[in-house]
Length: 313
Image (tube, rainbow, N blue to C red; front, side, top):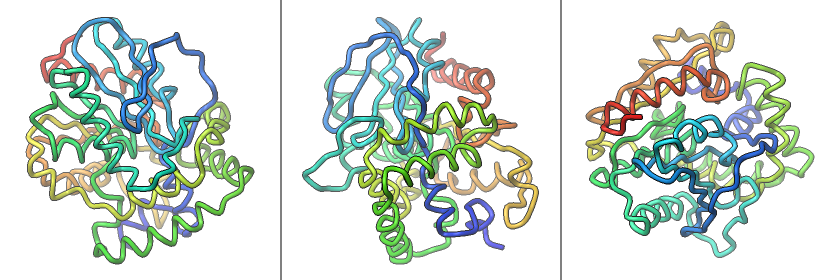
């Protein structure tokens, strides 16, 4: 059984659900923070002084996924929590173009506009993929990258050529775009229950926010992610990189998903082989949202990384 089937659901419908990597969350009360638009990004700023950290959520995500992280880091960091256009209630662009390209350009605009001195990018899922891509393009501007279950290529797609990936992405985008609001909500709940988090109460709390994201924008981001391969660019990513690989043994105990924690860590490391300084660390027991399933372990890893790259708490 190839690695694509081992890491992704068996059915194509399951794959579509699994691509909802940042499935949304219930509204969480957050302290008021300055909000601005930078390019296609909506940006919240937390904290008054200290090294800069940019938090990038995954597909359909928003700052809610980083609530605990923001609370901890804003004490002595300036934290920029971004939301990609089309997610978490932020309007989707209506003038066309590649959404990941535009998000990448907007990150560059944010760093330049605010004159940020080597910020650390912390991205979850699609946000982690975007952070790795950016490191390959602009390593000199960054202090480091933390990718939480976000990879330079979608798992299993490394075995396919560009044309095959693109064809699969087109089919997937068409199916995702056709979802009704009710189907979109049902997919989010099923995803969070089976892939997103371990605790059913957390799944029920966060899944309803899925409806705040734009269905067509979600489908386009997911398709762009499936078709992309950012591994070649990692050769230029000469910046500290930490990849966090969540692992929940029951999910990998039966075929076609049989895989040990060490095997999953090694596979992730293989996808990051081009990055000179990338390290993969596993968090368990945890599903896709490691910061929700294991908030203490996640925060310790993050703060340890910030200390090593010269941004001590």
